[in-house]
Length: 146
Image (cartoon, rainbow, N blue to C red; front, side, top):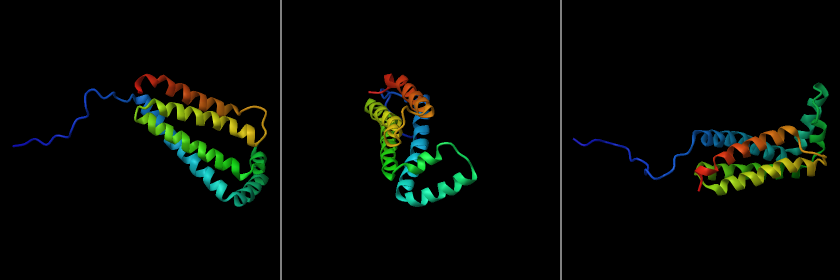
């Protein structure tokens, strides 16, 4: 009687660390949702502004007026940056160092984009915190990538 066994991965192939897998999954979720929302807002910008105006009249949210004054190109640019972050995460999931560099470049652009398009004097603290933390944690996993 033959035993049915699944093919085993080669022994010499490096195993992806759990932290790297978790980071990639979080990036897929976060960047994927932001990519989708950026493209939807860019595509339906006029409707977005109208809804944001109504929303801001009911709920006083800081910064909503700044978003309403931003041009649709900002949302296209951030959409491209989120797509680049996703590409970087896919490469890192495959243990390729190139992914880290792609991801890092697009995270830097995501931090700088609001400063350029919204004429801000400094980057937002949450942008710096999350981008910096993810780049740092991904960087800790570079030794597993080739």
